Image 1 (tube, rainbow, N blue to C red):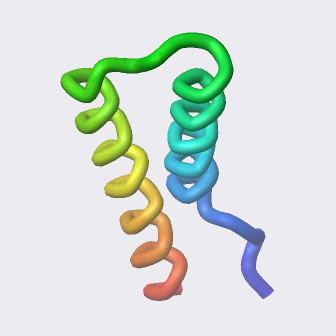
Image 2 (tube, rainbow, N blue to C red; image 1 turned 180 degrees about the vertical axis):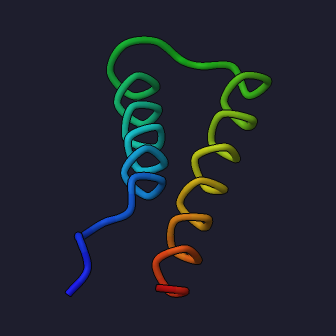
Length: 55
């Protein structure tokens, strides 16, 4: 059995959830900032999935 969810997946999901909560309830985040941050989160999640599959 593995150790569970990879750290990259956790960080990527945290970035995505933080963006959703901040954008919805606190302040509108401009697309110039939001798009690179979300791309970073997605890349981290994909990296975590690939590393988990290789084990």
